Image (cartoon, rainbow, N blue to C red; front, top):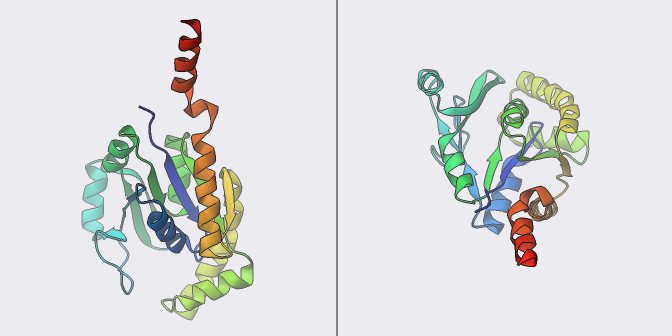
Length: 204
């Protein structure tokens, strides 16, 4: 059985990663969403075990000590981590796994999982990026300025990824990512067993 695809979606703050990933999950029911852990406080409407595992700093450190994370990093003063064992179980069963994480975390996963599919979301413009961060309504003026400047600086990091997708509309961005997934399934390197079977049949 061929292993599933590890699909990593990340991008600068405010590019709409969560919204695009929710659309993908609605469109592809077989896609397994890897829930990250974080020490940040839940936003309005977020539920523990759904958007994130919300942990205290002490709980997060215990998970680190127990080796539960594929990667972990500190971002904007909070810690984020990717639980490892569920991802491996799903991939080995041939299931595709969607991982939505910050850039620092994605680069750490990239070093450990070079066969993953790494997709960087971009905003249509810096003005739109500014509006999206403001419209969250969760940032103080000081935090907003820091987050926006950081997001602008993060955009250049996207050049380390395999794919860049502009999130002009959620539907269009999701369609592009679905096309990327379909193309990745057709890679020769992912179809070695198919070639071996056909070559063996020809020899017989």
